[in-house]
Length: 307
Image (cartoon, rainbow, N blue to C red; front, side, top):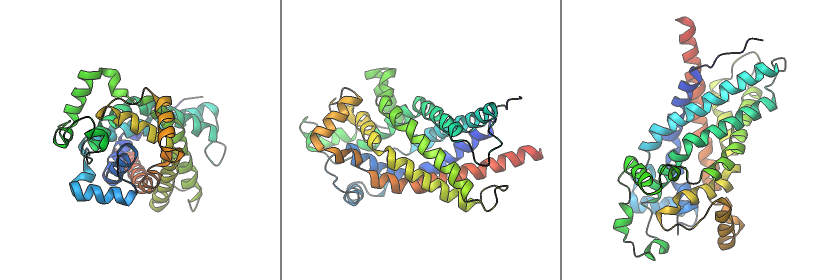
């Protein structure tokens, strides 16, 4: 049986989809991070009003330049790995005779994408969260360290300066703080991302022999994003707290310690902090990502065939 080759178009389309998702989802991502790792924001709407009052509209886009450049590459790798892995696994197991994609194939491809995502996404998320968190209102925790708000707000001058500070103080391993929690988030998270999308887009097709319409892709991608981010929220809270931890004072020794301290201090509800923002943000962000990905992929393949 002849195995297929790696298709580079999947990586290019993933890059474009990733860029679209950042533009759409970053403002609510900032709100989500502040709710999960910040202090004194209360409800979702209270957080939004506080950010707007203190930092204007620009506060919602804090730290966007770095993810716009890096998350596009991150999504390029994730989508490229998933699509190529799924195709190669399906060919190896010869499941092409079934009408719908095989669940086992999708699960293995999604888990592989989740593992790969941490290698690239860990440092990206870390820098993004540090930049998003450093302009929040001074909390009692920060003030107890006798750190002025002015000094606190100017901790990092930008993404490059942030990376340099982390590497200088903590070395390369410092760039992967929270990677364990991210792994526990992304492996099941990508299963709940790609699998619902594939099945929903297939079910929404008018004819099983045709490709999904733009509306079907947009709707399936949005629902998949809401499901994935909603279910990933508990471990996303842990990851955000671990990555934002060193902005104040090192409180958590690791994933288990963060879970135990968070539960003991704030109860079980703390792990669902930001779930509303995650689910709401997940829909437009993923809808834009999958729609841009699919349309770009079709255009690239059409261009390749005509050349």
